[in-house]
Image (cartoon, rainbow, N blue to C red; front, side, top):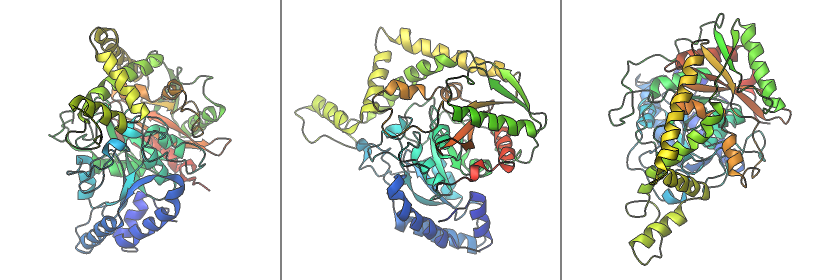
Length: 482
């Protein structure tokens, strides 16, 4: 089984100890052996993968390689990729082959990375367990009876199972950090607007953000250097000077102020989560960081605010799937209205329908002011809470979820309980802040537990540096499934 970090794979390729084709074949062999058990990949194309690897070998031989040339990567099924089926894990797009490539994917392909395949996810990124996929649930590599977390569960699973060195995910309400935590890997949600959303199939446009998922914070920093760019095709893309996200990796933690939000450190967290938080706090103190208590008083309001706003945006974004231009179309209908309704009834899963209905309701006449506008005001209060906290600290330490990965099917009958599991991740998306999940131990059941490092706007380098220093002095991120 291949077990390379991005940096290790890059070094092997650049020193010509292995060719890109040989490396790709190693991963393809491992995928064939392991993917049926975890269902992390939902689309593979060996010919395309090996052709890209051969092209990478030619670049290396010609001396035109970057640090990423020849390194394999997996892409969440939410990113358009020319010539690849891009289904967003939905029946609605099961037959859709992307005619263009998302900017963030193109940036990585231009650097010479080799696509291994498309990873499983909650349909249209709506879910916290990866059980809402048209292609079946992705399963946790540490215990196949448990979920991976969602919506980027497939990306987390393939990195954790070592059948991809790195993967691309997206985070709307914690969809990178929660599966990273449940699967024992590192995942970063950048500041909103740092990474282009062009070509990323929209769920909630003011929340969605692409991010790297890898074994280490160092790998995430290396990937983000190539991912981040201004894109004039994305109206929310931020035009900023390019920065080196690896610049703080060797910065010591002495004197760094770590905020502990009292609303996140509660008895509602399981014993395993509390132990992981204590592990992280002990490690930070050993390295000279200072722990200070902070408050985020609007925490409880973040869930209702998020689900009103995100559902409203989903209702608008998903209105384009009507059976007219592309995607699924119902075979039986008597008129145009019936074609629309039958197509959407057949093409969307239950969770997507639920959020569309919620979103349509809160945007309807008579309810817009009562729900949508109030949720927008709450969003500002949540963002203000973080700004007040960052006057007292440099980085905030928090859990990702109240428990380790739940068992499969345990939350299917109670969607509200599933929404509540996002309590510690959603506020970051409401405020548009960067946050990173890194492993901090294994629970009593052998499942990984991760913690979050939350930074102020554009502080990706700082939180990546802190995570890297923690990983240099611990081995939680090296744990692999049995």
